Length: 128
Image (tube, rainbow, N blue to C red; front, top):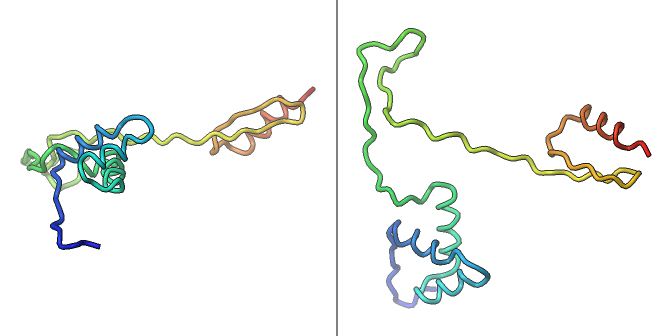
């Protein structure tokens, strides 16, 4: 509940600076929040936004484009192409699954392993 106060706005640079200050050991977020009069939930939100790329210190701007006379062979229209390369795709790593075999051996495999491959591995490693 607001008690007549004015909601403060923070620039991207301030948000990033506070998230950076809060990057420490246990209790760092709470300490930074107290020191700057910010709710801890805001710092956690800004941290998530920074990780997702939603929060950036770069100001939005125009992207330069080059206009071509005609699309090269094999390329569809439109003929405008951005001159800024696309960022690399985000690599997703599969979680590990731990299988304890009857003989006590432990097998760690990716969660997306093919069932046939898992059966072959278990068959090979489950021998006494």
